[in-house]
Length: 108
Ligand SMILES: [Zn+2]
Ligand SMILES: [Zn+2]
Image 1 (tube, rainbow, N blue to C red):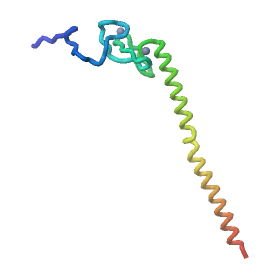
Image 2 (image 1 turned 60 degrees about the horizontal axis):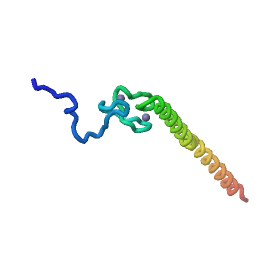
Image 3 (image 1 turned 60 degrees about the vertical axis):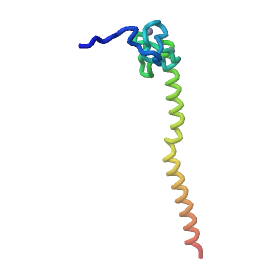
Image 4 (image 1 turned 90 degrees about the horizontal axis):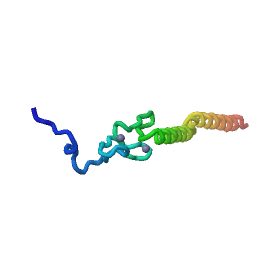
């Protein structure tokens, strides 16, 4: 069995992740979705909207997610009416065609 070295020396040089914003010396595993601070497993606040560093950021993230959802709902509204608009245009076109055809057919 080979001894596995675990400790400060085990961390490679030039690692992307910095230390936890709240705990110096503790390696961060994830970045806050709201402010981008590096945070360790102990500090992360996992919510339905993502991982945050604090309740404050989680609340901000939730507000942001809600706004995005509202914007998406607004954007998808015209699409919901598009098939109906197409049907109305088709009916109007048929009526116009009917009127034109009738006028031509009824001509003496
Ligand atoms: Zn931490
Ligand atoms: Zn944060």
